[in-house]
Image 1 (spheres, rainbow, N blue to C red):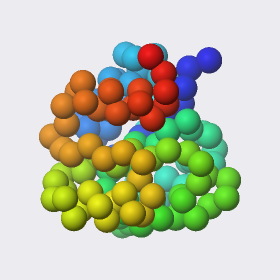
Image 2: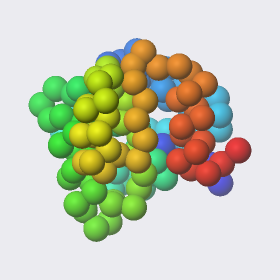
Image 3: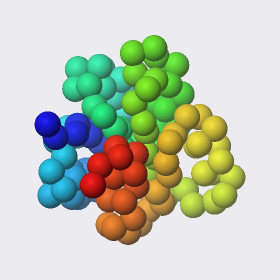
Image 4: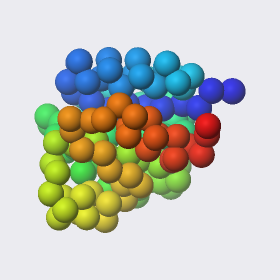
Length: 123
């Protein structure tokens, strides 16, 4: 059975790129453009991984990571943060919030796929 990946990304082109790339590697995906819907989508979709943009309107990806990790039903889902924030202190802060991996934008497609596969322990 295909692993399920929830992609939280407000930029339509990035959302399509991430979902298309994941589908090409035989993952089942669901995209969420509005971060305010991310927690409900995670509960409904039951993903094996969440790809989380950090810079979202209305609610930050950082706050969503904290919220997801505080939820008993969702805390075990690995989260890969994807962000244009590239400073070391940004990565440390995002990881401290609970992100299991961190990929900076613009993304390297192979690095993105490698990070997903490492989190899902698939080949």
